[in-house]
Length: 304
Image (cartoon, rainbow, N blue to C red; front, side, top):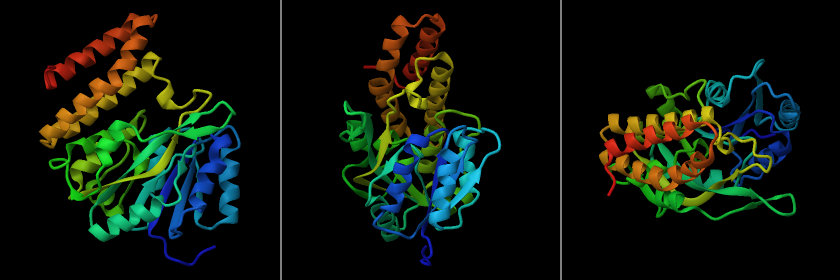
């Protein structure tokens, strides 16, 4: 469809997200900057996700499709996409989310101007609406703290609150950063982007932040997304492990202020809803896991 050399590859993993795929891919087609390609990774879906990916590639040669023969998980799907990146920049979009039309233009325009290793944008939730559709919410305070005001060529030392933006799909980064530092998503883990985000911040020579909303993140009405499963003990354990691992990355890099910022945010945002679940959870192991994690945070940064 286009002969313009691509500047960025957007990796789009998907598993059984057929109801949302068209919106995700349409949001790429609607980008005001057209010099992108996308690797669509079907993680052995049992619904029409793979067929929708194939149809998109048949209509637009900017789309490339890879099918996993067996389900391997979100981290492996993203790594499969990374193996196929041949552009200077790389970004991510989950196949049930939407990218704002100016997202790539704003992200790429910033990083090309500054020469940073990565650029981080804001995001909002897509919440179920009464009419059966979805409505985009406002930028949440922790997202604004990470991305507002705009900063060029910053670091976690100068801007520790950036550590609160831990999602994969609000960023564009230099492919070379991934290649030369060996950055990969941890295979077989849930919430895999939390650790990778901190590794990206600490390994980048500098990064930019912009207050623009670049992605609308869907909270599925059927409650089937990973982030909506924290009431189960296995998912809680994965979630707390990801939080611990992300903090450990910051500690190992000597980012004291970022560690403190991350712990404060976890205490204010992550722990309260988990504590509410623990109060009525039938398995006492749930509360015990949460208590151990809270004790770890106290050792890292005493309350008060």
